[in-house]
Image (tube, one colour):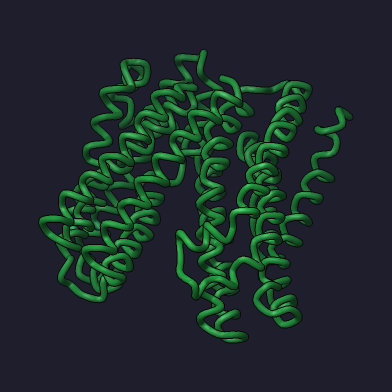
Length: 417
């Protein structure tokens, strides 16, 4: 599996997801207005958390060990059986939590019990969400990038078509149901395309899990929980601080830039997760790991630098297309945000190295340190420079993180074994 070909397929996946998401948002806003967009956004965020809990947050571990045990049928079988067991147990717990407290979740998410049936449907299908994620992790670990791309593409298209169809007939309720129903269809698409390679290793032994494997996968659960909470919490703190220190509109402009950043980073994140995690997991020799890391940095640096330059020089058009004139002051934030994202992308290579080699403590420290630095520097620079200070703080925190990682892995990079 080559990095260039993976980038191409990942780019296709990202393009389809971004395009489908943009069109779906336009449709929802046209039929249901801002309120509809807000409700769909709330459900999307809630589903992300629920899905992470339903599969035990072990997908990174599955990718790593699937790649590592690719040629060992016995270990692969133990991994598959144990992963499915963990998924089923976690799904059962989440199912009970959703069904029993459905009205509470509905009030918390939608501020009403009008959509409690959406929560019931989500609970009923949670096992399909979980198993679909597990299957995609298997595909990724085995290096089936074409099938991985096809399934992700089909998922985005199905979501878009269901959203358009159901919202046309049922308005906002249709959009909510579309989000929930999508994974039912996508799971069966994955089953059809995945072939016999994986299922022939799954047996009744799923009810006799290997607890050593469960322990190994638990490291990835911890890393996933920290990774999925550290930066979001930091952003909540910074957003609240900007609102208090400046005003709500400034916080909205800052949030708008973060959304743009998340959009253009999607392709890079998919590429790194799809390529580096299984690749680095399969390598044991220090020279091989060093070669892969250096080649990855040499490939990503000019590619993302060119992307950043393109975004910077078209920032006025991007703001005009995605937002309104009220967001025009955002353009002054782009330079520092892009510069920070450049170092952030390079740092991700080392993050995937830590995940692939189960450096749990180092990974957790990196995530927490990065988030804390971002918050502390934001407080200082926002008070010093105003809103632009938030982007300056992001750049400095990302640069410090990258330099720290290079120093920490200097023996790997320089070949001093």
